[in-house]
Length: 453
Image 1: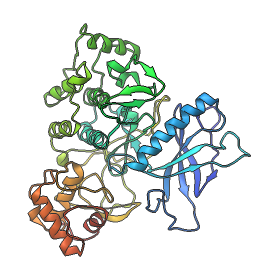
Image 2 (image 1 turned 60 degrees about the vertical axis):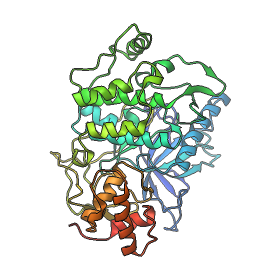
Image 3 (image 1 turned 90 degrees about the vertical axis):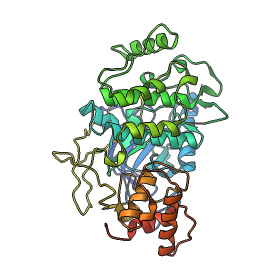
Image 4 (image 1 turned 135 degrees about the vertical axis):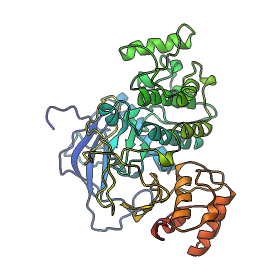
């Protein structure tokens, strides 16, 4: 790894806990991520989240040993934020954390004391997709999943604080996950406190030159909504929504816009269905933005043309029974001030529609082999009456088209009384507690049984 600026250089073959370090995946200003292979004498060794960890994972090393006291305080704060959030939240649109480790190796002072996060291993990033295809066909569908992740975060009382393409990861099934929660903050009423660091192009005007106290910068969920608006404009048009050839110029334009001395100039290439959404996300004052992300998600899903029929960038899984063609994705990762990770994958020459609810498909991941009818691959996330989104849509698809339960109603992603009735029928058939709540046991039974109809 000579000649490359790794934040935490770790030699190939280095062991930390049951994990062996393999190739580096990415490095940023605060951490380095490596491919990791699990070696343990006990194959049932549980992970920190209570499940069995996979054979491969992403090992995120955060240095806590050879730094100045001020740097160490900052790095520990970043690590603690990410660990705290990932230990508390288990949402299907957030990258999953399996364990946390601390390196105990006095013989290697540059590693001794480093914090290691064992994370779900992604196959790509939105940043890499945009580097190759500035306006990907999969953009609207991915935006719906990204917005869903924000809705899950905000509903749980958290602000991401650094949403951008590099922090959106793509899994082997083509689904999106939000990642890199170093800047995440838990709300205390209407505000949270985040470190005084952000990516200018995705930072709302009120936070470009914020007041900072001993607790950090005061941040609201509206900051994530602004970042989503910028990201959506980039994905849909290939450019930023404010003029300027550099990040500094665009930041100046954002400030003029916020002070009423400039206008928001959305690209003519922006589809009409998205124009009103982005105008509401990019309102100059935080109180004018579409801060109800659950309602925003419904608008985004509608503009995306119903995600059940949208085309996602598909990666070629290694153990699918039927091949799924992949959209071309890039294997390069860019950005040194932030951290996401990617790995090589095999792409096919053309794109195909993803598995639909009419045709559930067999897949296999760390949780086992089962059927999927969408892009969430949910095994352990709980959904119940009143919930909505892609997990509910997949639930409805599996009930109707894998288990022949038409009482589910429309496959619309809304968990209403008809869907609950279908769940109760299935739970009674499967010998489960018929409470109408879809938790890990019900997901397991849904995915493992039946034949496509």
